[in-house]
Image (tube, rainbow, N blue to C red; front, side, top):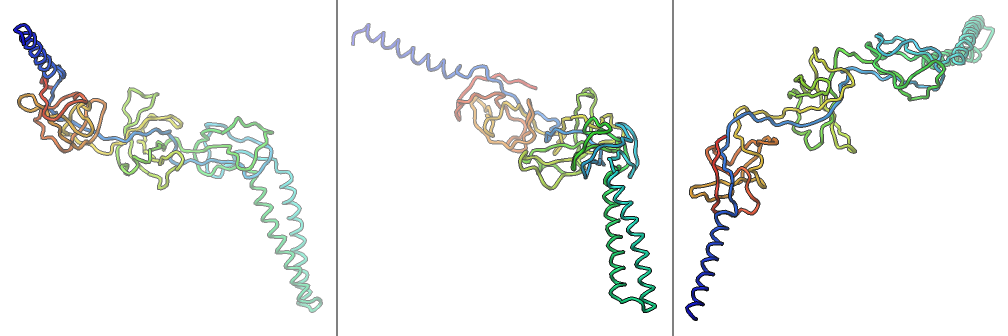
Amino acid sequence: MTRRGMIIGAGLVCLALFAGGFFFFFSHSSLVAVQPQRGPAVEAVYATGTVEPVQVARIGAKISGRIEQLLVQEGDTVVEGEVLAILDNREASAAVRELEAKLSYAEAEADRYRRLYRSGNTSAAAKEQAESTYRSTQAALEAARARLQEHFLRAAISGDVMRSEQQLDVGDLVSPGQLLFVVGDPARLWVEAEVDEEDIPRVKVGQRALIRADAFSDQPLEGRVRKITPFGDPVARTYRVHIGLPNDTPLLSGMTTEINIIVQQEENALLIPSGAIRDGAVWIVSEGDTVSRREIEEGARGASLTEVRSGLEGGEWLLADPPEDLEEGERVSVTRESR
C-alpha cells in the first residue's frame, strides 16, 4: 500500500470510530432522570350515573281506556293510595251495579230455600243450588269491583309527582303497561350508576365516591356506595351501583353525574412519572450512567404520576421517559432533576 493509501485508510478508520463514539454518546442524549417521590395516591373506579329518588314508584295503566279525569300535575305532593287519574269506567261501573242487583236477589233466594228446607218443603239439592248461585254471584261481584278499581290510577307511595312520561290530557287513550306517572321523595336521593363488569369486583359497600355534576362543577360533592345489584346487564356488561347522597346535597333528581369510586387510598405512596413505565418496568440509571431494566408492581395510575407498590426503594434514579430501543447496560447521557 502506498503512503497516500495508508493515510487515507487511517483517516477512514478514525472517521468511523468518531462516528461510532458520537452515536454511542448522543443517540440517547437529553434524557432526564428523576427520583421517586412520596405523596397521596388514590385508586378509583370511574362510572356515570343519574340522580334518582331512593324510593320511586312508576305508575302505569293495567287496562286500555280513555282518561276521564287528571287529578294531579307534575310537582304535586301526593300520599300513598291517592288517585292520580281516572279512566272511563262507565261500562265497568255498570257491570258492578248489575252484579250487585243479582247478588241481592241470589242472597234472598238462598235464604228462602234454607227456610223451605228446614220446613221440609224443598230438597237439599235445591237448597245447595241456591246457595251455590249466591256464592258464584258474590265472587263475580268481587272480580268486577277489582276490574273497576283498575280504572283508578293511584300513588303507590307518598311523595312528589316528579314527571309524567307524556303530556297527558283528558280524553287521551292509554294502553296496558303504559307508564304514566313517576312518584318519588325528592328529599332522599342517590345516584344510580353503571360500573363496568371488569371494575365491579373492586367496588364495595361503604366506599367513598367523588361526584361531579355540570351544574355544580366548582363544588366538591361526595357520597357513599350503598347498594350493588347482584346481577349485571349482559348486553351493556355493566353492574348497577347506588351512591348514597347526604341530605343537604344540592343535586336534583334527573341530573347526570360522573363518579369516581375510591377503592384504595394511600397517603404516603411512592410515586413516579407515569411515562417512566414501559411494559411493567422502569430503567434505573446506575453509576457511570448505565441503565438497567427493573420490573415493578404498579398501584394507582394517573395521567402524570403512578404509584409503585414494589420494585423500588425510593432513592433510585430512573429515566422519566425512556426510549423504546434501550438495551441492558447501555450508557446514556442524562440530566438529573429533583422534583
